[in-house]
Image 1 (tube, helix red, strand yellow):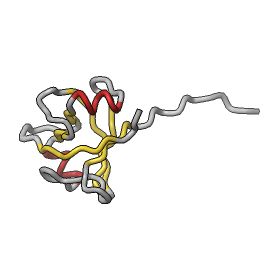
Image 2 (cartoon, helix red, strand yellow):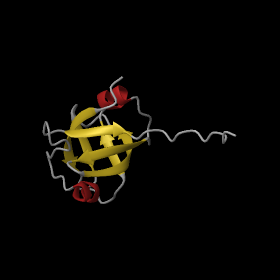
Image 3 (tube, one colour):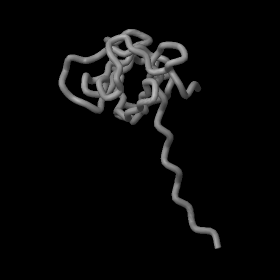
Length: 103
């Protein structure tokens, strides 16, 4: 399993925030379920959004709400990773289980 998928930004015209839509290939590669929270990074900025599968989006794309794209400073076709010019989506790490204090 890859824990990083490179995707190009598609900016949504629908008003809202906090949701991203990806095609099934990216969903499978990241092993996501509907509504899982992922971190989307652009240059030095990151946001956390809920991921949803949507078959209308082509492989290699992620639809971000306009406000989320603006918060990242990313426009249509923008990139998140400054090294290769692509959007990088990483699953947000699961919180570590709370353990007992050692004596």
